[in-house]
Image (cartoon, rainbow, N blue to C red):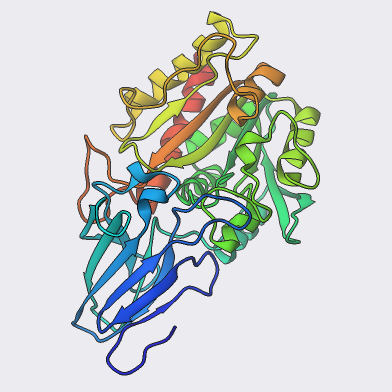
Length: 381
């Protein structure tokens, strides 16, 4: 729907765009979030508003009690940008009793166009730029692991001369764009020939990096699934060519290389904190194996105030770990120190930054701290 008369216009037919326009009345719009194709997950939104410079728009996203994670909406402020480079936050409020749960976003246009999103988007074009820039650096190799069901390449970058097999992979859940911003920060660090953390890691490790595990869901504007409605992070015990070729290809490559350390990078809708989840509950759990993860967690906690250990997911009871989840399967299958890194959509509860909240810039800074923590972890084994 485009602007007519004095009404605002709403558009989302672009890379990772996702919204449904229910009605427009002047500068006010009623909206809804479409579900992932062939799945029931709905949470990611990304759309453009055109209107008059200097005027306030009111955007009401309705039906959110039925979204994938209703706990994500209270105390959440939407992301907004007028140049698609700098993403700020704009005042938003959630009323669970209005139209099945409604997030009301208010914003005054500085120009006549603004983009709104659940988190700062990471486009497939930027993804390809990221890969191309990294692959052009000395000592970096790009491999095409497979082709997705939508016909896109699933790519991996490799670097380093060491014996430790390190896997970093992100965006199994495509709407968790924090994960690829983290990857951008990680690759900027690792491909810098003068960075001491990069030099240390490349000397000790062979790094295998998949910046985006789910290109199809990313382009389609999905929250959690690929092009055929599969949640990739539940497929690791039995991946298949017709439902989860992405996981099938990554796991096959892991079988070739082995895995000593693995970090799977994600975003969490409801918890206003950065945290790690480990592999408690796997069948082969030992306290000595688990201590590898806890030691890394302690190092990262000491390194940056953006990380904490108080908030997070409950630990699985003994023998009850879901091996369909990547971190659990990788720890069990390869004996690796594996972990899931979670970053928020909201701002950090105990270390807020009001203008941007949790942001692409903070994702990138966190990446370098995670890599520095990994180097210290390796050096103090």
